[in-house]
Amino acid sequence: MVRLAFFLLVILHSFSVIAATSKQQLRIIALAPHIVENLYTIGAGEQIVGTVEYADFPAAANDIPRIGGHQGIQLEKLLALKPDLVLAWKTGSKAEDLARIERFGIDVSYSDASEVDKVPNELRRLGMLTGREQAAEQAAIEFADKIAAIRAEYQHKTEVAVFYQLWPEPMMTVGKNTWINQLIDICQGRNVFANSRTDYPQISIENVVVAKPEVIILPDEKSQQQQAVIDWSQWPEVPAVKHKQFISVNADLLHRFTTRMIDGLDDMCIKIDDSRAIIKEP
Image (cartoon, rainbow, N blue to C red; front, side, top):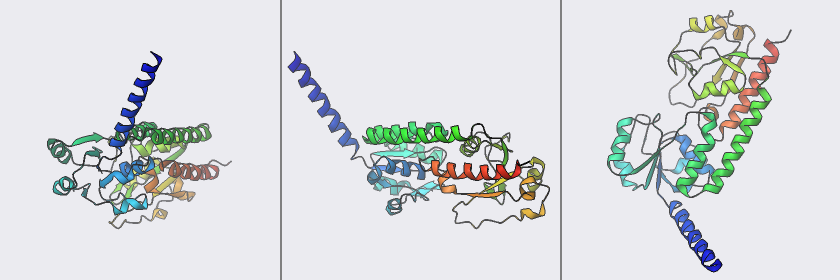
């Protein structure tokens, strides 16, 4: 009886190894930069046969063939790559493109890039899909531990009124349901436009003047479009301008649903804390 049980365990183990190996050979198309990064994080980067614009990390990702971007997916190129699995993000791709891919019978799995605390789940899901559960679990635990440490460090800090200048012209910022707002909260910042009706509201200089932010955050966003530069010195009535509290943050780190976000968050929290020491001093 013991021998039979042992024999069955050996068989089950063999099947699990075969299944994991099979998953590790899947041809994957990743339709968002954060999906590409997370696949590399768990050791599945070499399985990616196609991706989209701006999927530029790690360096090896730049060699992956491009099949489109936010403006649309080139379905012919996608089909030519003969993917076994497409990993997509509904916010990053057109709904009609994703529907067409599914109609071709291709397996599509969707990323739930919405909340900071869901990053570990995202990693575990990718680990399950690619047969790399152990590496994914390790990355998930490390991320969760680091987030917890940053929260603990700043949770009792004095709140600072923050304006996150997502884009200068037309001027845009972030609302309460966004990923960036969650990060600002962790740093004990108070997003002055958190109560906006939309997630990414378009605002005016006058709106900022009325909101009276104590810190203005300027993300260094990579873009093919030249960004306008706002001369904030013309509005000294804004506390952030009066005290010269402008901070620059790495958009590549902060704007992506990946483990690298920890580095961007840590940097932003430190800079907000430096501003806090200045604007809250007696």
